[in-house]
Length: 448
Image 1 (cartoon, one colour):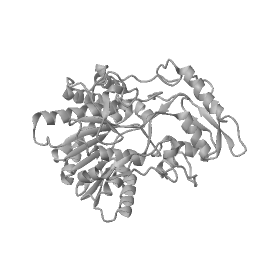
Image 2 (cartoon, one colour; image 1 turned 135 degrees about the vertical axis):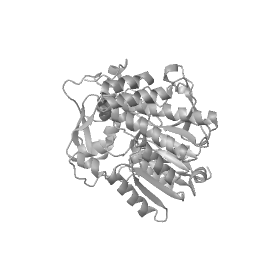
Image 3 (tube, helix red, strand yellow; image 1 turned 90 degrees about the horizontal axis):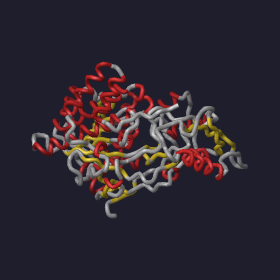
Image 4 (tube, helix red, strand yellow; image 1 turned 60 degrees about the vertical axis):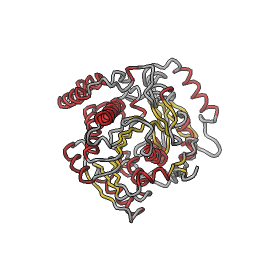
C-alpha cells in the first residue's frame, strides 16, 4: 500500500525499566535477543504514514501519561511526523525526565515541552492545556495495575474517570481538533476495578462526544474517540519484565492460572495504531475503535516460549492448595482446558531438562483479585466492522446485551456526583457500590 510502512516491533532486549527492576531487588544483566513479534507469532501491521502526516505534521500534540510505556512511544511516533511541538504531560518526575531526554536525543530539532502534572487536578489541567493549545490530545494517563486497584478503588475512580474528564473537558475548552483516549479490553464486561473505571471513562467520553455533536456549541469541533486494546508486551512491570527478573534470580517463573489467555501486541505496534486511529472519521464523535489483536494467546504457552528463549525448559509445578478453578469466575470448560494446556507443555518436553537446556520450575500460583481467565475486546463480535485502516475496527454499538452498551439514558451528571461523593468518603465499599450503579455488568472475581 502506498504511503505505508511496517510498525517496528523488534526489541533486542527487554526494556531496562530501572524502577520496575528495583522493585524486585534485581540488577539487570544482559539478556538474550528476543523478537517480541516472534514470541507472540504476530507480524506487525503497516502504518498509513500519509494519513498520519495529515493529522500530525505541523500540529501541536499533547500526550498525557507521556512517561509510560505507551505514552512514551506515542511521543516518539508523533515526533517522526515533524509536529510543531510535542507536549509531554506526566506526573512522575523520573519518567518525565527520561522521556524528555530520549525524545531530545532522538529528535533534536522537534520542539518539545515537559509538563510535570497530574491530570486529576482539573483546574490546573484546564489552565495548562489552554496554555499549550494542542491540536491533538492523546490521553494515556491511567491507573492500570489490576490487583492494586482492587485495594484502592477510590484512586482508580479519581484517576481513570475524573482524570479523563479533566483532560477531555480541557481539550474541548482549548479548541483541540482531536481527543483520543486509550481504553482497555478490561473495560468489556469488567471483573476488576481497573476495568470498571475505564468503562466509566468510556461512558463519559461517549457522552461528551454526543453532547458536542448534538448542540453544535463552541468546542464542538473537537472530535472525541477512544481506542480499546489488550496487553502490550515489554511494558514496565509487564509479565515479560517480571519473568525476566524471576529467570535472572534462578526461578521459579510464575503463572497465576494455567487456563489463562490474553490478547497481546507489541508496544510500537500499539502506539502506531493508536496514532493511526486519530486519522479516522468513521465513527461519530465519542465512538470506540478496537485494535485487531489477533487471536488470544495462552499464558502458559507464552511462558514456555519465553523460558526456552532464555535457555530453560519449563517444569510444571502447582502450589499446594491451588485448584484448577481457583482464580476466577466460572468456566464450564475449566478442567478440560487445564488438562489440554498442561498436556501441550508436557508434549513439547516441558517437564524435564534437555541436553541443551536446564530445567526451571513454572509454578501456577492461583488467580489474583480482579483477574479474568479470558479477556474480551467488545461486548459482541457482531458489533465490530472494518475501518479504513488495517488493524483498526469500528465498534458499532450493536449488541444483544443492552445493559452492556453505553446507555444514552444514563444521567452522566448524577454518575459524576455519585462517584465523587463516594470517593470523598474514602470507604472502598461505598466506591464499589457507586461503580456498580453505572456499570451494572461489573462483577468482581472470586479468588482463593
